[in-house]
Image (tube, rainbow, N blue to C red):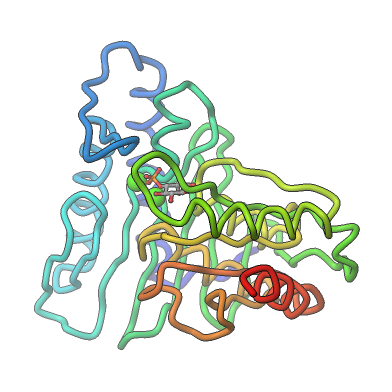
Length: 265
Ligand code: IPD
Ligand code: CA
Ligand code: CA
């Protein structure tokens, strides 16, 4: 059974409640209002509704905590030592296209350290949870990153830059290097799930650039607690600030870091 601290319990309950609304919206996509934040960056009524439910539920249980949420930004709490980092719907493009790969992502940060993470895919009912020092779990099963040691056997996840974002050339160079060294590459379109699936050993490694803190905060706790290594693409610990990230098991992290470094030249 997973260890669920009182705070993690609150996060799981909030994710379940918000997940029910997301499922309803997913079943009625044709009725959903959708607007554009920027080129290829859509926000739907589902993103906004889900974020509202999450903030409502989490604030009820932890009134003083602050928030960093994708749609609403920063909300200062009275308690300056805690904040929730929330992506109400990671994988909006999948969601809007009827692809059942999306998730709610909630992390808890205490005094600047990520301590708990929840990533919930309401369609598959997969609840990934992790608490610093207490391991990572998928529903009731303990998670462990994959054991593969050779890049040639590894299945690697990534995210492709899209229309309106920068870094396309750099990504193509990195993609080519990883293509030539690995068993395969996947782009599932939800960074929180990329990390959760890396924690679960479905992916051997995952790298992506230009991410936001809410995409990755919960997933970072999951991968670390499943025994994996997470750094930025330069090997440092500034993933939330830089928005670039590499996650892998211990054996593959260094080779991936070197491969990406060499590809950039
Ligand atoms: C996006 C997804 C996607 C990643 C993008 C994110 P959103 O989040 O995580 O996989 O490649 O960079 O912005 O917009 O669906 O919450
Ligand atoms: Ca996201
Ligand atoms: Ca989102």
